[in-house]
Length: 205
Image (tube, rainbow, N blue to C red):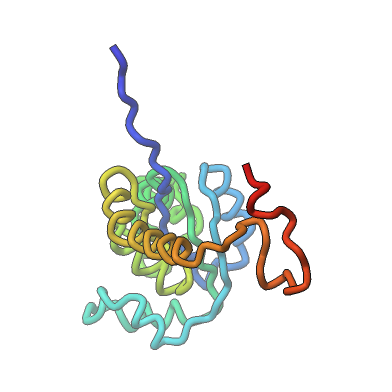
């Protein structure tokens, strides 16, 4: 009896990682840890956010007591944003980071990145997306040109092909058939009127 194998999943999960301003000088060793942990760094950029940009990035934290200090901290100097990819990238990166409060991380997860590089509950050294929706929004914010949607497979792929690809192909092929040249081997634009055809029509098999 044949065992049907599931279709291969092309999509690899991505998450956003940020090396915060106070530890940018540790970028090289942190990237080394990231790569040794099985992540691929898809893209990276160094940038300096304004307080307004920080407010927009942390919009979900708006209104909380620490919000002004957070935006001031994140806009205090350059930071490094990276798109990380691997199987279950979001959960693995969060695990590598440890608790958001660095003081707690030092007690409960001493080997985590925030325990090693963080200072307190605010200056926790690194950022990671909480879930897929947050990762998608945050990657778009830092890397506006990047495509983060999964590549469709299975029925989703068939629906996409039927809705968008097949009609376009059908229309294009129909137009090609309407303009079929007498001799498909000869480009009429490259053949002058004085140039005889390679074969007479009656010589064709």
